[in-house]
Length: 364
Ligand SMILES: Cc1cc2nc3c(=O)[nH]c(=O)nc-3n(C[C@H](O)[C@H](O)[C@H](O)COP(=O)(O)OP(=O)(O)OC[C@H]3O[C@@H](n4cnc5c(N)ncnc54)[C@H](O)[C@@H]3O)c2cc1C
Image (tube, rainbow, N blue to C red; front, side, top):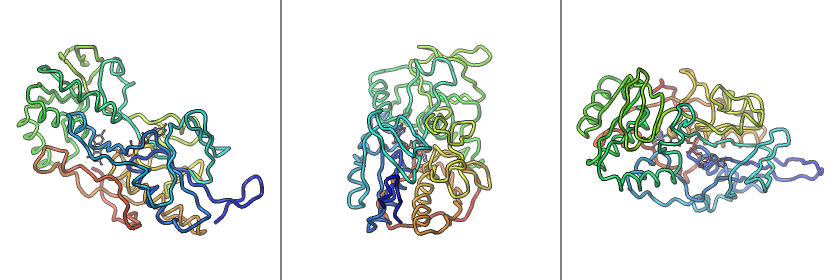
């Protein structure tokens, strides 16, 4: 399908994919592979780094473990997709343009919005100034340096969701000389079944992680974490994993977003306000039978693949199919406390497959 632009000339249909995380990368590889032989479709992927960030392994980077060097241009090699290195600073949904680093403008006919999300450092005072995060590979490397140089002391991990659990466990395992405290509102793994929860508890115990449930952090200071109720916990280092914050770009562009700023999609993953925009991964608010999907790469990668399949269908004049996704497991597996059961491999070039027909399951 060719697209007729303002000049009246037929030009290739431009698909622009923002963010080369698990979701954006899956979309790029699947789409580019499927349209490889088509001269009338051009696929471009934008990301600030050339190296693929294995976000789900950043707690390993933070404890000094080396991850595989995965180059995005190399992963795209042979697919025909173009890679643009840069930071998206604005999306103009009316003009269908994206500004990169404030000095480059890319046009699109179809946009795939996959800018992910990060831990929310704005909700609790002091987090921004005094806490470490795993929001990027660079943040994880900075944390690794600090942990390695601490000698002894107390590390407080704020947030007892899966990222907090994995991080606390990894730090305790790699740095047995440190006291690790895991703070959260609920019991770690509260949504898991009793057997998995018990396993998790005993694994954290074995690693010496002190778990404090029912803890609401109200302030982070340079050497203390203050809890609601007035209690203070001494902390030589705070790692913040709680909450999620997404880029404000979608809201600023006038796309319909939910209360957390995620792009609200229809059943086929298109923006409800701008159907030429697909939203994928953590940046999207995707409703399934059991509620809005929460951010994981297990869910994010299939959204990227589905967007690619839908774009190909639309290019052929067919209607995109609804996206259906259910979680198969929440296993906090052997032999480590949590990480091995939850890990997912980064997107690789695979034969195109529409995984959206997976049977629906329940929430984690
Ligand atoms: C420590 C840790 C452990 C985790 N473990 C697991 C696990 O075991 N299993 C699991 O399923 N999930 C896990 N997760 C969650 C998982 O990593 C995320 O759900 C997943 O990365 C979301 O994929 P995504 O593609 O939507 O976003 P991301 O992977 O965050 O990718 C977004 C991309 O967009 C880029 N980007 C952002 N803003 C801009 C901009 N303005 N301009 C250009 N590019 C931009 C980013 O640099 C990034 O490359 C973990 C997360 C963390 C932090």
